[in-house]
Amino acid sequence: MFKRATVLAALALFALAARPALAQQVMVDINPFGGVYMPISDLVEENGDTWGQKLGALFGGRVTVWLNESFGVEGEFAYALSDGEAESAGETYTEDANVMLGSLKGLYQFAPSPGSPFMLHAGAGVAMIMHGGDAYEDVEGTTDIGGTVIFGGTYDVSDMIAIRFDAQDFMYQAKFKEDDFETDGKFQ
Image (cartoon, rainbow, N blue to C red; front, side, top):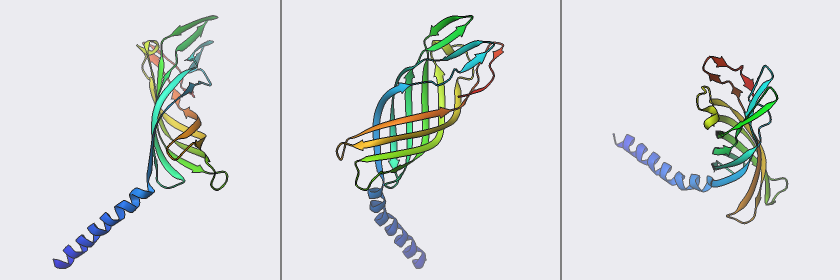
């Protein structure tokens, strides 16, 4: 019994002693961001008619946990003010819509040269894409699970402030249903 208690006490002491060392290695970044939501294809193309999202403002936030200087895990949520646009028989219709994007991804960052304040990063992960607003009021299938890839860079202005820019692509299968009409799934 005494040996067991001694081993448990030693393990507990080791765990407590290791905790500050681990805490020093892990860095957490929390930042808001703004940008542009730029769809590169229509969501639906059926019988010559199209439906898609328009270019819009994008706002969000992200939390990045850097496990070391190179590898991190990032969770992100963004809201895009992107109206829906339909084109049918040569007529164009616009309706209020939005897109919410969430992702969890791994990131790898590296400096182009040692000691540089500029870092490049690349990553990939899983994503959730949700279409909402008046345009999708009676539509089913507005939430999709897919993947995301990201490339970008960060410039350290100071120890506490950095400027980050990204290009990120969300890849998913858009398939909608309204009443008796169902679209073919289209990869985005």
